[in-house]
Image (tube, rainbow over the protein chains, first blue to last red):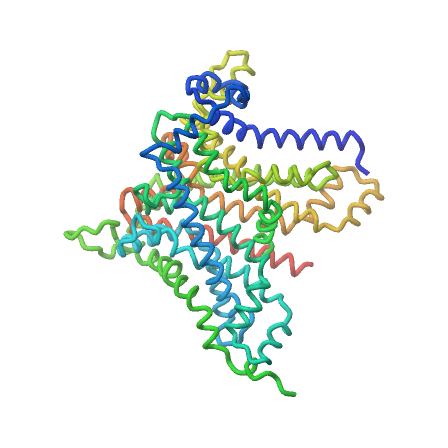
Length: 280
Length: 301
């Protein structure tokens, strides 16, 4: 059994890690709520940087970011949501359909195709970026939503996750439907897909995080604010010296809020998705 | 015995129809660029075509130039340095955190949720926060000054060739350790609790228990974590591009950033393609290594 002193040590260590994780976030929130940039620079090297007294908190920075004419925050946010929404929304159908065929239908070359899909998982996007850029450039897709969406809809790893899930479903489920004369499309649409809630959640979370955090690709294919995602807009804002910390942190808080709310609401799912991605 | 007809005959056509959307997209956006990068790596292709200088084959000239360039080796050295620092440190931190969360800590799900939280933040946000801490008059230098009683003025963390890479390692670890923690947690929970009981009956100390039960029980988890973390580390780009732009003096330039600069900034697509091919081969070697290791283990078990 664990002794009392051991448990106290565990608790102390855990609280130390909590402090290390939360302190930078406290810095972000506290700085974002300090309307006076001079005050921020005064506090910057001290513990006061991690705290704002409720009486002094103001939303000035938030108002500034939201009303900036050169930095249309809401437009950037929309761009990110739009791009990720399309990739994930269409991806679920495209990837699950392919996985259904690979796992529950019989045809020649099935194992070969499956092997190719699995092999493709290891190709890192970074190694494809330059030729892909050349292709996108040639078809005039620079500075467009298409360039950020279409190349990423089909996702070998998501196909693999769907494949694993479908392969485990009991055989008699679709046998019964085939006996009644259903077509493979109907079995996929009416039986397999409605059963795959858990794996849809996993795939949606993993893909959302991947493309919400995309940096290299949008850096190369977006120029103006019309289609630029929010993370890249923050990167540009950050890269324009001198840093106005209050605005930068307000921007950071606002763009993290949607993901943080989703995370807090579906924490269990987030963590399970990561675990599911590891059990290969 | 009669079996349903549709199960008996070949289902190629509906299967093909179901696979077509993903298939077309994969061929166009993964396989084609992959093959294209192989082909382009033997040419002097430019991003913006020059009508006076048509693209021509240059044989292995790109590879020869890369292997002879100091920039190339520096980028690889830096990337591997980053991996060598990040992988063990981050994995150890993650394992420690996982063991805490797996112990009989009160409210351990809350702890787990907090530890995992930074991984859902975008790297750009993380960089903004940490660059504030790294400022000359920022928090870390305040700590240095306090600890030296004001004798040391502190460091310019990101502009110092010796400190820039470790500073980037720290940011990356803070953001990423929750990922490995969650995987270690699943690994810990799959260890048979009877093994721990047996160790205790034998009078093992906590330390002996860790090395005799926990570590061997996590063998496959270790391999997975080490390989995935290494591959993630080799892809290092955003933190560096945002915090140091590869500087100072190229001390934080990475392979992916070199691909980006060569192909996108300088428009030397041929050269960047050769670099991409080499990068891919390194990642491939590591992934294949993982499969070999895991297979061996399965055969033993």
